[in-house]
Length: 260
Image: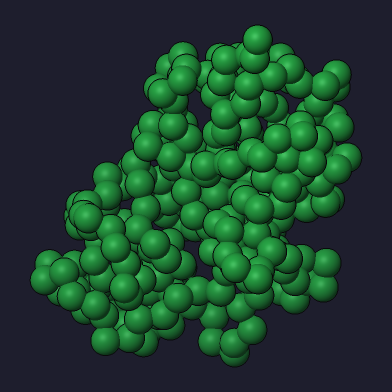
């Protein structure tokens, strides 16, 4: 008699510098495929993993959830064993059993990103923070105004990648602001929403930098948002500074069970 299928959530983190994003791509190394291969090898059954969203090539995740189905018993110390099998740039935090209809992507109701930028060259963080190597430093006050302006809107077509297949451009933004860390040359953009459009955060960061350097005016940003048209100067910030940082689900959705 075979064991019934059970759905599990994986909580993980990854440095995306050496991956072509989360999602599987033919001929490229992805986070999804790397985790699936590890699970399949250890459990001896083909395991398919569904993630809570897509991250682009070079983008990182401090917190990421995915789900998979498995009928069977996990080997002892399974999370530890799985982490030993995976490369150093992927860490599994926990695996927990959830309801059969729980969905890592569709059930998430809150997501946050951070975008890290530095104005001081750092050879030890070349692939994990964006180095702004231009003579003219952007004005933080203007960037802050541009970020705050977005909280007045609910549709974000100007900050959506071309050929996007999203059915709606509506996002419920809860936070959009720049924060100077304890290192004055290190700025972080914080944004929170129920959902994000493809490429949205990097396009917003690019817009803020353009406003901060006077290449785009706040009026132009407002007009683009009012008319839901793309900015004449649309810039996508580099991927290495972007982190998915927090995914939230309804209370009780993920049981606080011990690590497997």
